[in-house]
Image: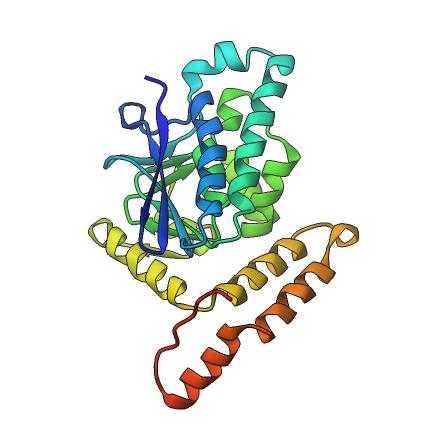
Amino acid sequence: MTGRILTERAEAVGTILLDHPERRNAISADMWSGLLDAAQSVGAYDTIRVSVIRGAGDTAFAAGADISQFGERRSDSDANRSYDQSTAKANAALANLSKPLIAAIHGFCIGGGLAVALNADIRIAADDAQFTIPAARLGLGYGAAGIAGLVRLVGPSAAKRIFFMADRFGASEALDMGLVNKVVPKAELDDTIAQWAATIGANAPLTIRAVKAAVRELARPEAERDFAMVDEMTRQCFDSEDYKEGVAAFMAKRKPDFRGR
């Protein structure tokens, strides 16, 4: 079994499931390709306002890339180049989703699994979550682009702590360093994810899309930022039916009914 990526839709929420529980959802080469397809599929549905990514079973979000394939797929730098291209495409597709992406993290979140979680806009962890990037214990190189995402989130010092130590740390430390947004008892993880997804999904999609685009551009090198695109998306918010509905609902003290247009 090399695992698979499943997608589900329930009203306004799209779910991407890492389904390889017999290997703690370790991400195989086929699964990296599946993540690319899943991100494109979720992004294509206008009815989906919020996306969630999670691991199957009760043990792990994802216990890293599938090391059993490294002898074949990453035997040397030449072989690794093709592997890295596949993972980069999958991670970029997740990071560039126009809809908010929430990572529901429980159990092991290791290496490539943590890299996947970093693509989410929000990370909510169960109190049993365990994090590590074991590159320094395997002797493998980690590309600058992958390290940059972690540095932007937790800062240089915490990023170096994660890479240099290559140890496991828990959900409370992850929260302290800003790696996750919230920690909840494991029994409450599903309900918390559902509540956050429902709250986000009820808000104005055009506003959220514009904010997500702005944050993404701010993370780019200054010379590469496209604020004209963000300005256009902001203008679309003010010209939308949703803006009129939001103001009317506020004045009438009722919940708005946003349509994304």
